[in-house]
Image (cartoon, rainbow, N blue to C red):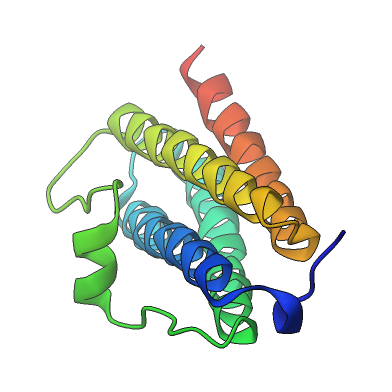
Amino acid sequence: MTQTAANLSPSDKEAIAEALNQCVAETAVTTMLAQNFHWNVKGMGFGPLHAMFQTIYEDHFIAQDDLAERVRALDMHAEGTLAGMIKRSKVAEFDGKATDKEMIKMLLDAQETTAATLAGAGAVAANANDTLTEDLCIERGLAHEKFAWFLRSHLA
């Protein structure tokens, strides 16, 4: 039977919120990675990469909110500090200089990591019959896989 946020057990809510907070953290760090690269890309590919990085960080900024608001709909605490997100995230910040191809590769890895985390969170939600959260995770996972494809295509 499909569950709504109000009908989930406290332990299911806790497990789903933990998985979603991981997704929020990785999305937030990936957002900043894309914005960092948007600001700092240079070279012959500047125009299209600058635009693509902007598309990515704008998408991810909205996604952070959607994911965190789902945590709150479960009546759980949404991680809201940068320090907490950086500590939790499997995606690392980048503070340095990189070539355009290095930027693309780092952002590709971040997309793949975040897509995998979303797939895992979707599985946690599915185990609790929380199809609304599962659907959100599937939608976001597909978006990250699409961005990974775009980035991978630049490296071919």
